[in-house]
Each structure stands twice: as structure tokens, then as C-alpha cells.
Amino acid sequence: MAAKVFGEASPEAIQREADRLAALQHFDLLDTPRDAAFERIVRLIKAVLAVDIALISLIDGHRQWYQACSGLFADEVPLQDSFCRFVVAADEPVIVPDATLDYRFAQHPAVTGESHIRFYAGVPLRTRDGHTIGTVCAIDRQPRSLKAGELAILEELAGAAMDRIELLRTASTDSLTEAMTRRAFKEEAEQMVGLALRHRHPLACIVLDIDHFKKINDGFGHAAGDAVLKAVAGACRQVLRAGDLFGRLGGEEFAVILPHADAQGAASAAEKLRAAIEARSVDGAPGVQGVLGVTASFGISALSIVAKDVETLLAHADAAMYQAKHDGRNRCVSWSMLQASLPTGSRRRVLKAGSILFNDRRSSIDCTVRSLGADSAGLAVSNSADIPPAFVLRIDGEGFETRCQVISQDRQHLEVVFR
Image (cartoon, rainbow, N blue to C red; front, top):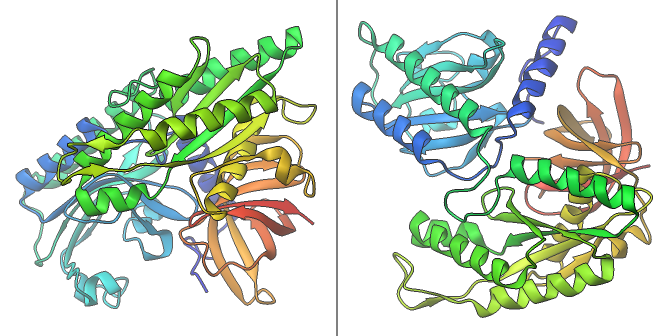
């Protein structure tokens, strides 16, 4: 059973966590692409403080996600395994000179195992309104203490990271792929949806995710992954019409808005995109000998009496895309195929801490509720492998609890309908 981060929290603590997650949602940075400025900050932390590991992280309802990290190979860690959850809970810096002597961490696998973590210093990544949305950390494999002024240096670098987060809110173009950023894409997509509803013309949405992208990064390095991302974006731009909207939603996930296209037209466009990506082999990628083949999986949704906003369109297309992954990848799946037997209504984007309860409520897994409607939800988890097809979803601190059935999933995402 997963331990809850804040234990039996008071109503004030529950509200504080809800406000913190709302502040985190405002920046819409979770699972966004790597950023050179954040990478520079973590390298600076390592050099100035002479530590083995430095990271900038964001913390949602179920995990600590690394916005930038130097010295570790993971992209995230479940919240119950995170040192940084104590920084969020305390809302102040946490310094651990020797983890083997601290009752909170002495038996932690990162301390007792191969990672051999000994020293930890984490400071809050704090918004202007005072919400701690993440941490900036210096970590070492030898016991040590912070010298005079070093904590102040770490806090200044946390301030620099927060300044960069604020600046990214205004960016409109992804520097690597030249696709629109997630925020800019959604803002323009909302305008397109409004026009489509006003003038009663069709509009459709496609979400695509590069297959086995993590294996490319892990096997050949991020430079090879970047080459693949550029190639996929280039293939998409060659197929899309001038009036179509193309954005990068996350690391290897892209989305398209197709004005004046219905579900059938979007399915045809998705198939053209799929074929173009499959045909676009990547030659000469850094660290790769020979040609690297690439495919992607696609989900399709369209405006309807239920899907009248961008968040619902994206949620439905996401669910269809996860089904395409489940069915074998390198294929296109339409939301209407899932909707036929399991209809769901409109949703709004949220960021709420939740719990998945199963095994007669004896087992619990932390989750983050990413989208929520009257009869369905989109959930994120650290690993969905042990989650049964039916369970109880509880949204912490809100008195919300309902039975759910999984309609599609991948390793870290679940689409569910309420029963």
C-alpha cells in the first residue's frame, strides 16, 4: 500500500495542497520538453556546490517529476519515494547532512542501495503567491554540510529557475521542433473551437505519440531523441494544411487541430501523418549507426454535442491514442470507436491529488487527476501495471469517491468511466 504524503492532514493542510496544485496547473509545465536554461542551472549547482547530483523538480499529486536533472537517469520518482515531499510539506528548506542518520531516510532504497545517497539539500521552488510547486536540490553520495552562504546560493538558483518558469508561460514556439508550445496551442485552439461552434462547421483533433521514444533516449542519448523529434515534426508539417494547428504537448506527444474537418476527414489526415512518419527514417542521428526507423500512434476526436472544448477534445483523442498503443502501436484509433460502448461527456482540465483503492480497499495507489467530467476522468500514475480494470477513485480532501472502469491505459495514464 502506498503511503500518503501528508498523512492524516488537517482541513487547512488539505486546502493548502489543493491551492498548491492549482498554482502548479497554472504554469502547465508537467511533462513538457527539456529546456536548456534549466539544464544550465543544474550544471551550475553541481559546479558551485561540488555535489554529484542536482535537480529541478515539480511535484503533483502522485510523483516528483524532474524538469531538469544532472547525475540521475530517472525522469521521475513516485511521491512516496521522494525526499522532496518533505520540503513541500514543511514549505521550507530541508537539509540532511547524512541520510543514514536521519530516521526519515535511513532505510530508503536510494540510501541503502546502489544510489548511495548520503547528503540532501532541497529548497522550495516557490511562486510569487507563495505556493511551493516543486524543489531545487543538491544531492551528494558523501556525508557533508552546507558551508556558509551555500544555502543562500541554492535559494538564489531556485529563484532563477522560477523566473524561467514565469518566462516560459509567454513562449509560443518550441525551440527544438518549431511546433507551438502547449500553452500557445491550447489558447489558439480554443479560438478555433469557438469559431467552429459559432459558425457550425466541423473541427477535429489528432493526438500523436512517438512509439518507444524512451528506448531511443535511453539507448542512443537525448541528441538522437532530439533528431527524431525534429524529423517527426518535419514530416507532420509536410502533410498538414496551412490552416491546421500543430503543437508539441509534451516530450514526444504532439497534437493537431483540423478546422473544417469531421471525424472521417481527421481519420484520413491521421493515416497520412502516420504513413509520413513511418516513411521518414532518421539517418545520421547522433550516437546511432545507420538508419533509425520511427513510428507513432494516433488518437482522433471531433467536435460533438459532448465535446465542445479543447480539453475534452484532447482528453478523448488521448484516450484513443492510448488504445492505439495498447493495440500494437503505429496505428490510428478514433474516439468514436471507444465511445460506442462507453460514452463519456465533457471534461475540464484539473490537477488534483487522488487515490486508487482496490483489493477491498486494502490497497491504495496515489494518482493525479488530470481531467474530470461528470462521468469520466483522466488519471496519471507512476505505474499502472498493478491496477485492476475496476476500482474506487477518491479525490483527497473533497469527499469525492466513485467506482471506475478502465477504458484505456498505458504505463502511466488511465482513462476511466464512472460506474
